[in-house]
Structure formats: C-alpha cells, structure tokens
Image (tube, rainbow, N blue to C red; front, side, top):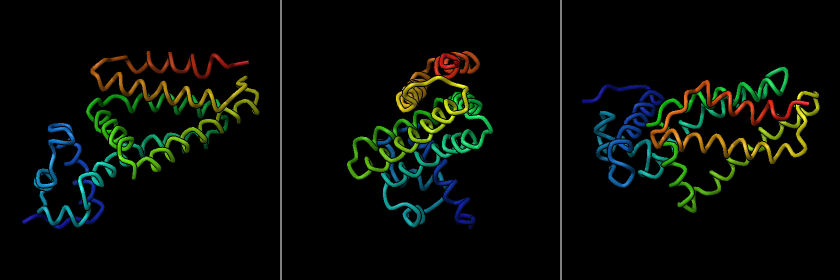
Length: 194
C-alpha cells in the first residue's frame, strides 16, 4: 500500500522516478509500469496523473525548464538590463552542472522536435526565450550599457551557445563553470560594451 501524498508531492515523485527511469533505460526502453514501480504507485495510479509515456516526458521536460524561465524572470527584474543578462548567463551555466538532468532535458527536446503535436509548444518556448532575451539586450542598449545593432540576432546566438554548452556537458565534457561563465560573458556582454 502506498502512502497517500498530496497531489503536488505525488506528481513530483512521479517526475523524479521518470527521470531515473529515462536515464537508466532510455526513453524507448522505459515503461509506464517501471515508472509507476519507482514512484511507489500502481500503473493505474500513474495513469491517473499521466495518460502516456510521451505526456510524462513532456512534463519532465517542462519541470526541467522551470529554473531557466525563473532565471529569465529574475534577469528581467534587474534594475539594469546588462546586470540581468550577466545574471542569466551565469545562472544558466550553473544549471549545467548535472549531465544526467541535461540528458533527460535534451531527450525531451529531441522527442518534441520529432513529435508533430509537440512542435508548437517547443517553438513557443524558444520564441518566448528569444523575445525575452531580445528585450533585455534592447533595454541594455537603451540604458547605454551595450552597443548591439541587432538584439534579436545576439539573443539567438546566446541561446544557441547555451544549448551547445548543454550538449557538450551531456556528452561528458567538462568546462569549469567559472571558465564557461567568463567566456560567455565576454562574448555576449563585454564584447558589446560601448
């Protein structure tokens, strides 16, 4: 008999179990039965929360993306946009310290790109990130802290660099966080100082 947990705690336990299962067996090798067992649920209990393995992976991916959105929220609230950009870049690099979670996040991205029903959600997320970073760069220009001619292009390049760092770390390569932060800050902030 499983202990009755509040819904939020139960869902969190399911998502943690799914991350472990996906890491151990890969997406294709994982099953809802195995995730349910890891979470201490019956299969029916799991299906009460998630109707499919795809829905479960999508929820895991969204959970792993929340800290990044939180970094953007914090960056947008910074008194100076350039400080918000610095904070976002440094914080993002700090989030890249767990290759296993990054691997599951990237699995979600790949599955999302290959699943037509998911593509609009992923495209919306990328556009949202791009818009918010573009707004930070444009604000930094207006505040006189950066000289960027095309903020949207720089924002897109930054997103690409950060995603590339995730892939690099997932492949088992290490870049000390202070070094990665220094390089990214030099390229995407200090390079544009007037």
